[in-house]
Image (tube, rainbow, N blue to C red; front, side, top):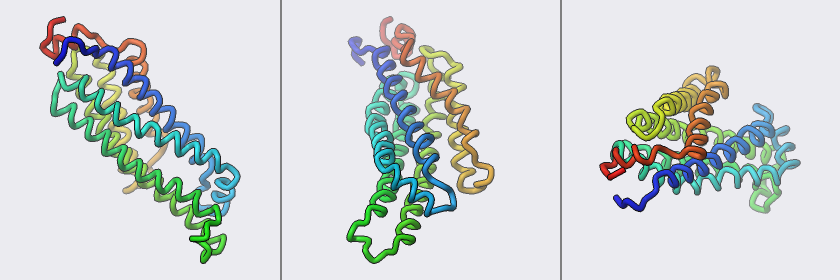
Length: 236
């Protein structure tokens, strides 16, 4: 491992990317889909989408751009935390990559919900009510696929939390917060499928504590570079 490598710079880049991921996901899910999708009412949902198509397309971009950046984030986190555990860092990176792949598939349903309402000749055999129902179905499939992605994301957060706890170059309280975040993602996603009535956005609020704290620490502090080099077996 090169002595020219700057783990603090990498950590700050990871914090910047993580901030984009949080802001992008929050915008598209909380401020667009949650506001436009009327559960159980395909017609009202279709009206909302038709009236806010540019916003829906912006939400698509706000989700896709962080997914592309996740490829870079996975590589950065692997290099930062392989000094703690190579296998653990690789596991965390795989969780991030699989989560991103599943969420990318979910985004196909998001854009399909817009396309079917635009009156394409391919859907000339459908009446307006059927197109509304089809658009709503795509949005529900997006929600389910997105929730599956969060299962893998939760696994990555939990693994990263364990790596933080075992590191000597980051505050261990951040590890506890990230373990809590991962547990919340895993619990809420499983409940979404096996006990929908118990699933709630409130279960994900503690996750914001973990991810937000780690993001801010990466951005403004980075990490203890001397301690990182000691754990890596390099000279401080």
